Length: 243
View 1 (cartoon, rainbow, N blue to C red):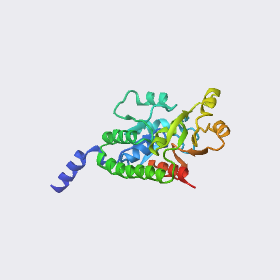
View 2 (cartoon, rainbow, N blue to C red):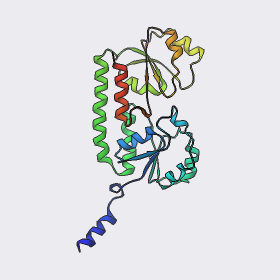
View 3 (cartoon, rainbow, N blue to C red):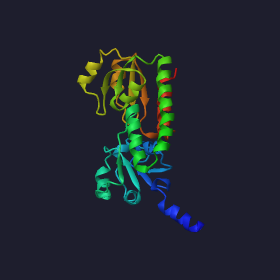
View 4 (cartoon, rainbow, N blue to C red):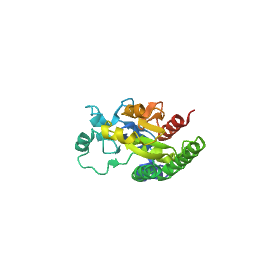
């Protein structure tokens, strides 16, 4: 009888409690999946790539996606044309999220994944720790005198800049700065420039604003020893508040 009950439990056990094969497009979407409660995540684009979103699929990647229980992606990845062919309209497998570092987007994207995987409680625990880190970042930016300063910010770093309380007086990228932008930003009185390590383009701004301090931040985990979203936020915070 006990053996029968055990077999029934295993058969009826919610899928979310069993080991799930989660594959992600990049280290960034993988980090969101981990925050959502995935125990382990395989990602396709090598973390050490300068531009992970531009990764083109290898033949060996196709079986990984085909065998995955879930595939987490953002939609801007070059690989998505091929991925969509592999998924063949299987909407139960793909989970599309928005990848940004503002709190509202973070929470929504993490919970989108968690609801699909059945890991809501674990995701909530992770989000509590993440929210505490966000509050710490805002407080540290205030204490260091960073908050309130005028900043020119790479488009992909604007959400984090706003979290720190910076006054974003202009944004640029991901395309190279135009002559018009350079002339416009010359009179911005910005004291901070935030660039993006994955496609740094702020050098012209450093030339026209030599007194401004330029920091280069990251988005995709895997750079500078980062792996999780918490790692990225902690690293970026350390960079902008170091003396």
